[in-house]
Length: 379
Image (tube, rainbow, N blue to C red; front, side):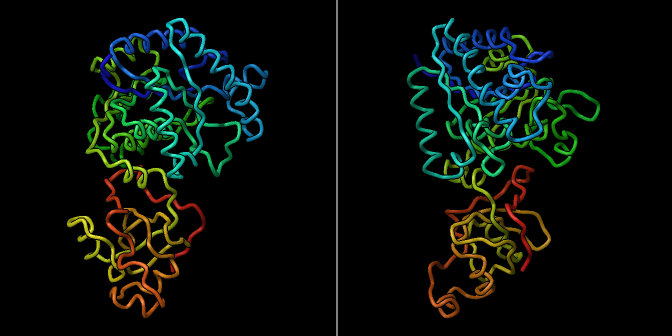
């Protein structure tokens, strides 16, 4: 059968669980039935599912809601992940479909080799006509290696497998404007929208509308159309692949190359390079590399090969890329001509501080704000 398309479906805890606690098996059964129908039309499906912690909390008899401590969260996830996969396996087996559990952490996206291996595994599962069911590995993940929310995880998966659609299912009808009306299409995600969206207000999940918009930007930048919709809407999966209007759609942007998307959204930002106006104009307008002469300062303690943001002093980020020099070396060669590098450092590894091949110019989006990983002081 010719592939009609590839869809990644993210299901949140509030959609997947009952109000009194525990998994909603009827919902999972209906979801499996819809996936089986689009499969017959040639669609490949990947599920990114929440619900492990919620299922574990219910089975262990813990107080309703999300546990407050990391050990309790991990214990609940250890119990609940098996229950969650059992529910999916039984529901999909009724339609002669095989499911495959895939547990990921942030390291699987940050380390290039692991990223490629995860992508190859998912591709192999799809070729075998299995349905990958992905969750963050909450049993072992600590804050330092957690992705943090399954909206972001789903966006990263959708980008990695070059999906056609990312469908984010929640307990709301889509992105709502200030009057509470669903916005049918968002062409550009603005700071005003993210401010209006706010953070999570649920007791079982971690991702509110703000994280959904940020996830949508990540996926759309990889050429993936994004739909945010109510998971309880009848026929939501089938109607989405049919192209019917459901929820809020964020059309895809120009597709970044796989490597540049990985640079932009999967690596931790270790510092900032402040540049002058001329350097910014050459980078943004002409696609040039960043030379030492264009650097006016640094922020953060970073090494050669680390990801850094590029910004005007006092301004917002306009690009990010891999630095060829450490922050200490950049401080020594900033403002200098390339021919002076060897004299100052005693060596010249590169002419460029950041080469254009290792750089991505940022769109105006909250998803590309600098995210420093440690305390940083301007030098």
